[in-house]
Image (cartoon, rainbow, N blue to C red; front, side):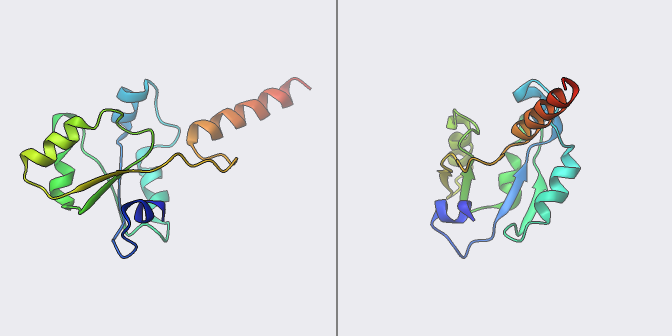
Amino acid sequence: MEARKTANCPECQLVVVLACDSSIERIKGHKPIFHELERLRLLSGLRVVDFARLGNEGSKHFDVILDINPDYIVLGYDQVKNDQPLQNFIKENNLNIQLCRLPKFESGDLISSSEVRNKVLEMVTDKNNK
């Protein structure tokens, strides 16, 4: 929903590319909370998502863009702080893609798997200390 709004394209198909477990480990320095297939199944089941797939790992990680051929790429607020390599890939491949970035979503609810993990640990610790 927010991706379509950010791209100003309510009629666009929403294709979500998920990072592989190995990418998350490399970037964040720890294993993901949920396995990539669990995350893929979860996102695929959302009504707002038209299609979800795993991204590529390694030096060919941007090739997923050639597979999908999107009009827009909407990055999360905390994804790829330096998007210059992505911009270079788009330019080198003569692609007409608009890059957008989602604003940080603040609802007061748990919105990331890390926040969920921390809340569960806090609850378990509180329970064990009683």
